[in-house]
Picture (cartoon, rainbow, N blue to C red):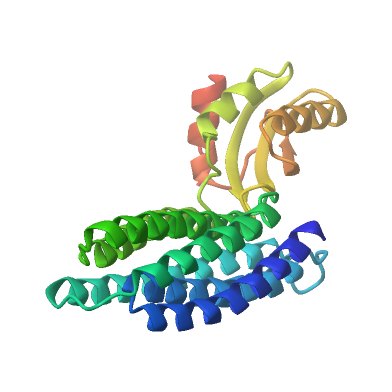
Amino acid sequence: MKTEKSILIAFLLNLLFSVFEFVGGVFTGSIAIVSDAIHDMGDAASIGISYFLEKKSKRQPDDIYTYGYARYSVFGSVITTTILLCGSCVVIYNAVGRILAPTEINYNGMILFAVVGVCVNFCAAFFTREGESLNQKAVNLHMLEDVLGWAVVLLGAVVMRFTDIALIDPLMSIGVAGFIVVNAIRNLKEALGLFLEKTPHGMTVNELKEHIVAIDGVLGVHHVHIWSMDGQNNYATMHIVTDADHHRIKEMVREELREHGIGHVTLELEAGDEHCHEEHCHVEFDALSGHHHHHHH
């Protein structure tokens, strides 16, 4: 619940703020502020999406989504990140135009807006600092970027106030946008990895196999599949070859996997002389246990 509430607060703050900001940007003639406003509106929209999807992602598994709704949270992160990427490209495009044709900027107004910007966004970042989901991290990342972005704008505004180098304004906005693009791409990669059922971060199938085969009574292991719903909830399925007491083996394998951060496990147990129906198994099984079967075709 905490996550949802903090996301909602962040959403409202951001929405109100981006409107205020847009007006401020137009009023002062600063593209850094206008571009920040566009980016903030994107943030607000994506946080709104995150809010609904985060809410949905907390729902318990049912007959339609047997794995639960955790992926909705990841999907929220993808939408959010995509919006940010597009927004940043618009910002960079505008800033380049500004570099080619500099315009007049009201520096004092800009400094004032930047001070307010730092304060408001600092509060928003403070509200969303806790939270585990990828989605929540995406939201908090936006908040920190906003604080950073405004700090940069403030600094630039002060420098321009005293030096009158108008070029600083578009350069700042390109800097902020570039920072966002890099982070957004990193976020997208992580989310897409989850959708493509990539083995969760920091785990290797071979290492898990070694640990499981090392359990007393386990003759071999094959058909190992590991995936993650949302970066926290990890699942695994595998076939275990054993002639020992199945119940004891299951408990030990589950315990081993839990230590590796895999909480949901489905195990298939086979006796040493049983034939798994897939060729692929024999090969691995032979290699691991040293028994040589005649392959039945």
